[in-house]
Image (tube, rainbow, N blue to C red):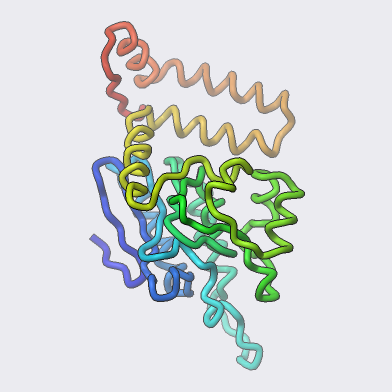
Length: 263
């Protein structure tokens, strides 16, 4: 198993936890961490036993954003062929955005700036009741580069997105449930156990069915409704011929738990 400097990977049955592990920096993402994050996501993408991925952080923070000491370019340095921080982030984001498996952002503590952007790249966010979440770019004279100006208004609406981004405030997770940003909150002492239970519930579903749902949901945001509805019908027709669809029907009739295979 691969050993990382800034990450920890733990497999718990069909659920794999991917932790940012720079607790002394509230898991701010360095250049090296960004490279490792991409590599770890690829490994989990290709691991057949993993059906659900949970992204979280060690210590008091989920992710405090980019490590500003390493993210800002050196204006005095000569041009370099090496990728800069934004290029590394784009490479990681491409892998995360194209994962066919469900990815849960488990926000255990502070999620600010790039940390919020990382959480928004996941399928949905759950959080500890004590977690503080917001977009802090404006506090440091920075601009988002990980999709906040695109994803945040789609999730919470443009006016609330303006408020979070312009003010730089961090709000407690329970308040953000009503905004639609956070799906579930639990007390910090039971947070990981409850998240694991939720992830196991997802892992028991048809991997093929969830893959299709995830793709259709993502596509529907960017195409006309009639096209999206047509795509849904075509996909449903195809899926009905799968093993998992047949197994779901048999399990319902036989009053037992289905055993999905992903094909």
